[in-house]
Length: 410
Image (cartoon, rainbow, N blue to C red; front, top):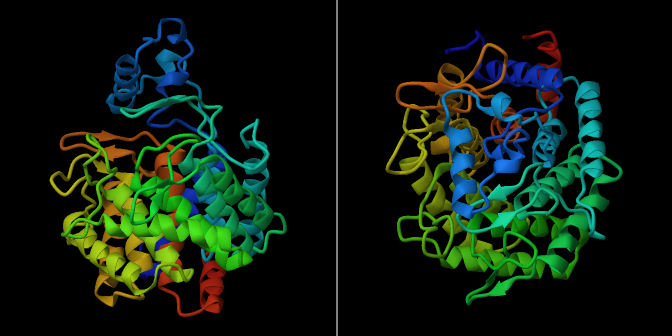
């Protein structure tokens, strides 16, 4: 499955980003999702009306070596989370001509506005499918923390890097949505945000994504309410770091596992808070210990992303993208990890890249699931590549010139 090209590491990353963007433009960022089974049209009248049945159906569609979506009548969809991650990639740039990047960025922001959830005065977003997890059910019409936080962070990138005129207003609105509709649960030290409006499930990556958004908004606007809420969420998660440096998915029975991409979310959000002036030396120390655990237990020396510390398989492209992004963000503070980001990129190109320019969903031990899920795989990978490219460049001027020089690369 190797799709390596000649050139320096930065040049190869730019070519990979451009190929992936070309795939995205052809597909209009629409496609399947690992968790879209409950959108089944042909099975809809017979869907099991029980949480376990809904979960089994979801997992069957997700894990099947054959694509069951055409049989079940599951149409391709467009996700707000996909657009948010893509907006971050286009705003950060470094791999497309500026005019092209700006056109794609403007389109992402425009479509994000169109996909806002109805019924709330503040901007908020959900998924384009119903979700049944081991914890709760929520419909496609309901906003959730992940989609809304991704949207807010993507909009902040559009404002800070792309100077988009409306993006900051929308991002501030997303922050106000969290303060008004997703109240924090106090749990000394600190307090955590829930996953949904009215929810009080203690899930670290969800709470920290909100904290990262609010920390950046506090730095942008000077608003104390954003900073205070971000600081409380940060205190909650930092205080619950395990001795080895990891965090469980959640602080409730049945949520004790550790995995690659959720760990990366927590680490990147923790670093965002530190960079925004929230948390101080204690937060940075927790981040350093966490990155140490992450690099040792969740990214093998050759760049292979592990799904959990105990298991390599399935090798998931979101874990690969997260490894590239988390290690790229860490490289300036922890130079000893600088080469590992390129190892993660090289692994992704050797073992996960597809001829189309997209990346496969998962590699099992004996077979590969080549589904090109936009929200789960392609948008996270494009965002990760934008971080990788920028992390290797000494200046904005150099990044722009390299991107222009590779305009025709495929």
